[in-house]
Length: 240
Image (cartoon, rainbow, N blue to C red; front, side, top):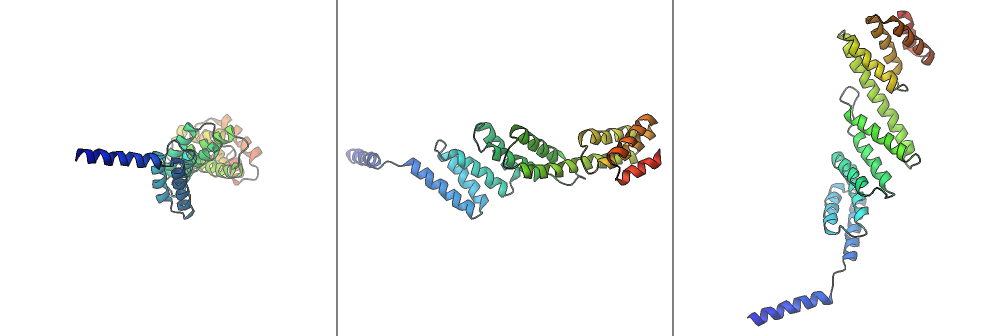
């Protein structure tokens, strides 16, 4: 019995030695399978397949493209926390990879997709805006510049509007110092936002409520010169 077992063991290893597994070919086939799943837009399934791929073929030439594909699948599947995590991981692991720009773009977009109305908390708007600005600063010329500018305009308007909403809340509660700080922040940080003229109008009122009339006149003059066509400039003039 023992001799039979040894003989079978010998035959098994001999067969393995004579027919080695081509790991590179197996990795390529698995990667191509994941690509086909992506083409079918079965992103949840692709995420799971690519996770297994990374565990099984961590050193193959398809390992890095598979990481990027899994990131893209997570984003397209609406799993934005996962796509954010995978994107940051990719950037950290591959600082010199040419696809890093795309990974950073998807991170910023993952934040953007979690950004909501100006009436709600704006933590993801700030994260997305900072990520887009950082991407433009690192790569002034990139394939996503036009989209980034569009999203930056939306995000700037959104966070500025949030500040005005909070400032007006403080104003209604007669908390003029807190209101002033909010409107002043919009003036200094988001000068090009759609609500900047409105913020300046309420800033004039806030300064007047605090009896800081020189500052009120200065802001009214700024409103008149920079936003002369705005309804808020006319309203501010009536206050003086």
